[in-house]
Image 1 (tube, protein in one colour):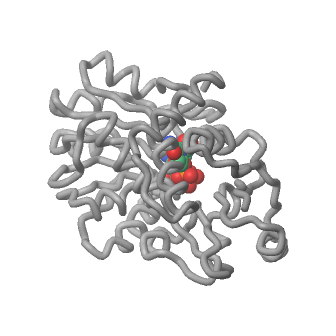
Image 2 (image 1 turned 30 degrees about the horizontal axis):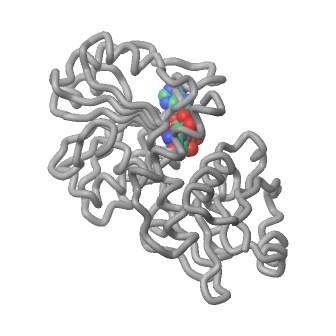
Image 3 (image 1 turned 90 degrees about the vertical axis):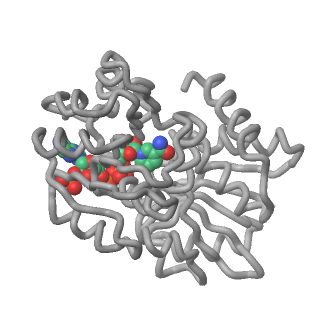
Length: 281
Ligand code: NAP
């Protein structure tokens, strides 16, 4: 039995550190390694993995969507998102899951003490991470989630995927963001703005002024540990959370799928967080 993370690039992935630490804490001698798989090579990889004792793998760029038609079964949450990040071999069949949304909700509960149930949320972005987070928030009972995106059509498309109809598309200009922030208890950034290496930044942080004083600001980015958005929110006295707890919690949920058993989530997340801190993350 062995586990992997596949992608291209993938050698920078934190997954081997996170999973390695959790497996060691559980006393399991199961190797977890990073494996470069280029776009277009998935069918060969799936054959190779099945015949070489790989019982599960995580997938990152550029495979999360491309895997969907190649797997034998897709969990409903992953089907709704249209992407998988965790694949397990069950009775000879490849089964795909998406744990990003569950990781985001778990991070919110642990990091900000917020249960999405009945929350009104302003969510920035409509890419892959936004879709996973937004659908999970809706599923977890959020009252309304405004999906604000530079490309409005993408926000509209994302909202159309929500069977519960709790997502509302919106524009990304500062006036719209301010109007929606005033109605929200939580603001979630799922754009790349502020990420290390991203050349762009928010043009104006005035929308943060409109958030109620008890609101939380959750940035999915974890490099840097404090984005300018979080720094600006902190200076305004708002509660903040970066993307590290989401990264760690999506891994705990993935490991539950790999091992096909439930784990004590918080101690596992703590083990993974400590391992990342030891690595300087
Ligand atoms: P993606 O699919 O490429 O989506 C990027 C989003 O950012 C889109 O909504 C895009 O808007 C928006 N955007 C990019 N540049 C912009 C700009 N200059 N102005 C306004 N909007 C802009 O990326 P993703 O995979 O969803 O990832 C998004 C972020 O989440 C990344 O920073 C990633 O590191 C983070 N993330 C964190 C975790 C975690 O575990 N913590 C997991 C996954 C992702 P358009 O649609 O208009 O292009």
